[in-house]
Image 1 (spheres, rainbow, N blue to C red):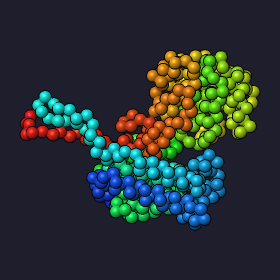
Image 2: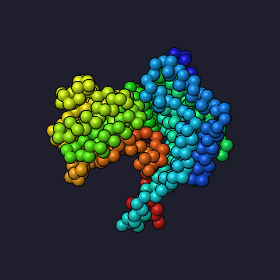
Image 3: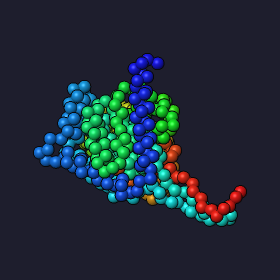
Amino acid sequence: MEQSNVDLEGTLRALCLRARAAARALAPMDRAQKDRALRAIAERLRAEAGEGKRSAVLAANAEDVAAARAAGVSDALVDRLVLDEARLASIAGAVLEVAAAGDPVGQVIGMERRPNGLLVGQVRVPLGVIAMIYESRPNVTVDAAVLCLKSGNAAILRGGKEAARSNAALGALLSDAVRSVGLPADAVQIVPSLDREATRLLLGMTGLIDLAIPRGGEGLIRFVAENARVPVIQHYKGVNHLYADAGCDIDMALRLVDNGKLQRPGVCNALECLLVHESVAAPLLARVAALAERGLELRGDEATCALVPSARRASEDDYGREFLAPILAVRVVRSLDEALEHIGRYGSLHTEVICTPRYDHAQRFVREVDASCVLVNASPRFNDGGELGLGAEIGISTTKLHAYGPMGLASLTALKWIAYGEGQTR
């Protein structure tokens, strides 16, 4: 190993050891102590968003955004990077929502008396040290930090190079807020190196990191999954479908397409593929085609192109693709069975939607579709921790161990068995 790698590994190991010590200090802290830290974070974020204030966070973010645009980063991805006063205020509000949420740590579950007299149950405990590896969105820096703090975990945050200045400024704000209320400053740490080798080394810190959570593009997720020697929660691409069933309300289906695809095309819960029953294809696709005036591009099968001449013929790769752009794959199907078969082949276990007036079809869709969130007559954009009542989320898991879907506070804990006896022996 080259000397530079030795130095980097030593730096990262020291960072992890500090995080481990901080995690031990956090684990027994009560809710009031942790909530004080969260309120201090929110106060500092609101101060940064204050009118007329020279904000170190916004100044750093402006440099990141300028660099991203100069590098030719797409508008959708730049949108995920941008911070402004309104977004900072919104992030602060989300922090206060987490502070207002119940503390899962110490929650006792299922205490039962065994025949031998033992009282047996489980209690929620922190996981320990969580490494968050993510791209683009600097709000993830705050979301991850506050969720880890509230659930008694130390956070190691490794953001992408495109948000390096923003994350450094937010990291300083977080550490200052945590320290100001007596929590260990090392409870939240930003990884100093943006080198991919740093990520690989971090993922090898067995015994020091309890869970790694990657959040970003498919390439990042695969790199983490292939190089990790620590447990990983995976969040692969969001190839999300909307199936417009026979007899569906055309106006409703159009609203779901519009909101799902065009509100924020670059997020993981955006709509990527529209499946349309042949009986409603003509009226619905005529309305969807009109969204071209707002920049929507359709890529469809032969039946779609016959109904919408402006649509491009879809390639096989367009189905199962996360565009993260105002592009929508479309396919006309003959039945619910055909729609389910398509989703089973191309879906990514993220979010799936049916627009239907039929209760039996809705129930079958909910029962048979494998995804972290299945919705009936509602936008895929609701697969979000805040919208589902969890407050901020640390990510959406598309694996099933140990969490599936948006990961809120409870997903950042484990269940420890406890037993109370009176001298029983086995």
